[in-house]
Length: 108
Image (tube, rainbow, N blue to C red; front, side, top):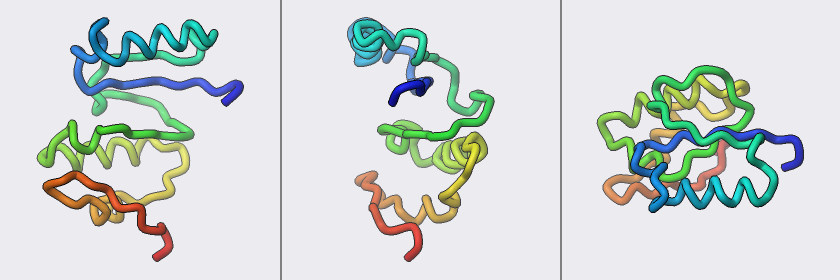
């Protein structure tokens, strides 16, 4: 999206190594001229500060594990500038042990 900036927070510092997906992502961002628009950071997601217009979570549900899931959802909800999905509803969409997330409509 033109004019958009993004920040990526991997859940493991090993993901930032050249052998993992983050290194190619940095290379691609550089080739596309997006180096100044996307920052790949390595903080613990619970220590991230600020507000975000959009939050995309890829594989985070599986990565944080069941014991940290509530903290993860609360942190994401608290960081959203315009929360649209209550955390209690997000919990209902998780099916364990497969980790599948249902795509039910928000206004069911």
